[in-house]
Image 1: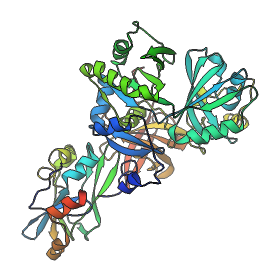
Image 2 (image 1 turned 90 degrees about the vertical axis):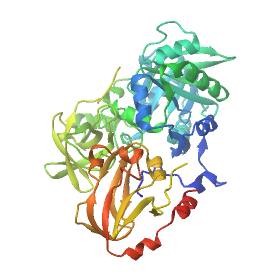
Image 3 (image 1 turned 180 degrees about the horizontal axis):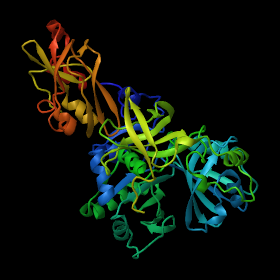
Image 4 (image 1 turned 180 degrees about the vertical axis):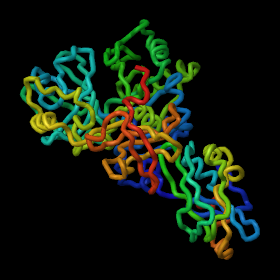
Length: 383
Length: 126
């Protein structure tokens, strides 16, 4: 048995070595005690599953799941120049949101490729928390610090923060019990700071699963207490710990991009179907603006599409070739056997002129060509 | 702890073989199914195809990963477990019984001697 996906296999010596560059989340010991399988992800040791990916996936769709997302980075930006500076660094328009809301945005290179995708939480008028991908924390921070504008301060507070996500139809119910909160605490993408023990927790109604839910950002030392509180209140309602394996299948069904798969320095947001998050007409010029403006005029050469395998066969996987009438037109960026739909589904970056919904494709799996059809995104969402 | 039946032979790549009068029945170990978890697809070899020892002969896919299954010994495929087509999760439920994957007619039965015993395999997976 070999050729196991790299995400699965972590040689023991890597875990043991003194020069181990892999980082541990504050709840690492909790995950180990729960018997989680631990893998490397984005430079971190993370639980990929506690019991079974399928079971954890189903819990989030039908009840609730609790995720440790402490590997994500938190960059705090403040100062009187912060709003204008963030707008000059990121593709979306931060002026569109008031304090107390979050916004999805992209950090681009000069040619319009994606350096990272992130959520910008506007905590106060001039205080922002940028939540960035685990693998990009240092790179993002260095890049942003180098380009820092006037009257703006940026701090990497990733080590001080832990982050948990509570997702699923029972999430609101559990949240209310844990925090004694009122009935409808937050709108989608809204956030608040709420007291917890002797400190405070930032609660945002955001997530990466296609379900309603919350993300909590809190001092690392409180992570264990909140983790336990959520499982104590949520356990009777079917809430279980969920690892990165199900996080990936959940986000893929909801067609959320994953950095390193759908988003790369060589993929533009227009190709990835994220033009909604690129604001061309704001006063600030941002990296990649000119390149994207040109691409918008001519139309991107490639497009990210969602496809379903139409018959039986092996699940599609990243990097499998995509064909149309026998010719290669692109490749799969993410694929799986959808636990909810019970069929092979995936995202693929293909030639733009083949990207219409309903188009027949073939996915090449170990030399066999499986018929597939382009379908509307997402495969699943309860939102 | 994963189960390791005494009467089988094992490979370092986590296949097992049961010898039956010049034939070898092959599957993956309890340890391997535990590592993979949630098997969702099994690709079986064609009957009549021949494999040398250590050549990939089948593929087992979990939610996250595709894994090659190697022929532990050389031979010709004489039977495959088609039940795995409809019920790939048998690999998780019954790795040594219901989820045998393929049966080989051994071209060189002495190759079996080079495989690991249950005790050796147990030491290997710790």
